[in-house]
Amino acid sequence: MNFELFLIDRMNLVFMRTSGRVDLHGLMETQRFLAEETLLKSSLDVLIDAREIDFSIRAEQVISAGRALRASRASHDVKRLAIVVKDDLAFGITRMFMVFRQIGNEYSVHRTIPLAIEWLGLPAAAEEAITCQKSPQRCSLKRRAS
Image (cartoon, rainbow, N blue to C red; front, side, top):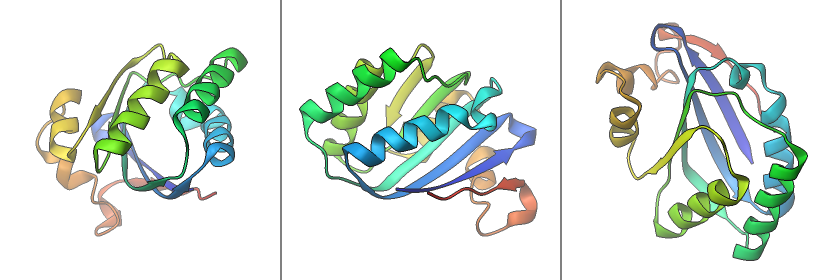
């Protein structure tokens, strides 16, 4: 799984774009890495665009991964977490993982970026700000890829 992290200072927001195939191993490794990511330990809101994720994981794997990560106490100290997915399968898998992971923060899964922005209570200008790949000068950029 690949991802990019963008810090949008003026909105106290971390925007993360993810893509690629998600299987059990990739999910576990990515969650462990993200638990160590300093941007996600900063009590900021986080919006994850996961519309380019292809799930290759079964329900029982999602449940066991969520429980294992909960038991490991790997956590994110974000204020609120909004995840945007592309279809019913992604919506269900993401919600299931969040429930079994028992993320202690406020979180929600959405179908569109504007709905996630609205849920986070951000101004409408946030949608323009998260298109940093087109205009990198608009925000501080921190890139990571796995």
